[in-house]
Amino acid sequence: MSKDNWKAQTKLIHHGTRRSQYGEVSEALFLTQGFVYETAEDAEARFVNQGDDEFIYARYGNPTTRMFEDRMAEIEGYEDAFATASGMAAVSGALLSLLKAGDHLVSSRALFGSCNYIVAEVLPKFGVETTMIDGRDLNAWKEAIRPDTKAVFLESISNPTLEVIDLKAVVEMAHAVGALVIVDNAMCTPIFSYAKECGVDLSVYSTTKHVDGQGRCLGGIICGSKELIRGPIEMYIKHTGGAISPFNAWVQLKSLETLDLRVRQQARTAMALCEALDGHPALASVRYPSYKSHPQHELALSQSEAAGTVITIDLKDGKDAAFKFLNALEVFRISNNFADAKSIATHPCTTTHKNVPVEKRPEVGLTDGLVRLSMGLEDPADIIADIKQALDQL
Ligand SMILES: *Cc1c(COP(=O)(O)O)cnc(C)c1O
Image 1: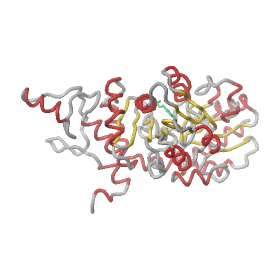
Image 2: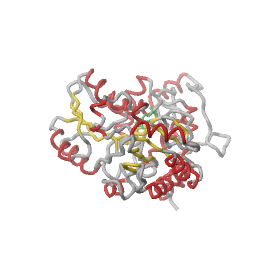
Image 3: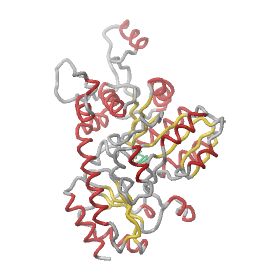
Image 4: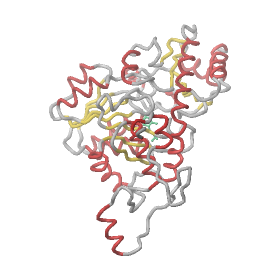
């Protein structure tokens, strides 16, 4: 059987492994910044050739990091990948390496706070014109994309409002004018995403989230064609210093072995929780794009196998009810991260999204009663019971 035909779960365990002369079973952690050369001639040759197995400096290449990049690219179906220090180093690296003063970018409006800062503040500061729109509205994309648009940026599933954007339709409009499509896929997960099949040029992840999956270290990755990844993206990141630490790359490489098992379990729990909460009198809504009550549920399932591992609930009685609910939780931890083995509850309006101006919140679906629930790996029965007992206390 050819390795190319291996299923994803097999590739997540074996793909891209580089064994040292010792034949170690578990992938080695090469905690080294630099590399030595036997002779001056070898050093000279290394700087000329830079072959696949030839490393010079960890800011742009390290054997452990390369294993992580190769495995992620393979899983995502892209030719190559560049691993970064965090999800934001990946998002900002992808945008800043490809855009220059005078270029035009179209972006969806429902963005993670730091992504919004890059699009709304950083890029305009360097002369990139940005147009921000309601990403669910295909007419808005049509009007905003111009013949001189160089790139479009969006979150495939927005955080925390769980809006879904039609990837195939946006790709078609963008490619018609030669614009690149850059997608932040953090909520969707590398396991469920069909971004490559939908024609997305660069699929970007905060690997801090599901890839690490155990709340330990930051990381990010940009997946795409060799031409883009080893061209402008590597050039920009290697010179600006956004590379991942080999230690974090190793932690996250080893995490890939269990990624598929973890996110499938979390998505099953999300579905079971939606069913258990459907019609609950304290809730104005329960949202999970894979679940039948989500207005875009068919679209979500046409471009991903499942819509991530996070659901939101909207408490009818606003902030007071949300706080009372959060404080009554026993299994869920109150935190601002998501995609951990531990179930996590977040009140976006007072934490992660507190900087979104109050008047702009309705535009992106941010309400005072909104609580984001990230499914952990605890027993689903305990997760559901915990949410129910906390709601009963309202
Ligand atoms: C968390 C997150 C990021 C940023 O990732 P970091 O690893 O924290 O830098 C970017 N986009 C989305 C959608 C996220 O959820």
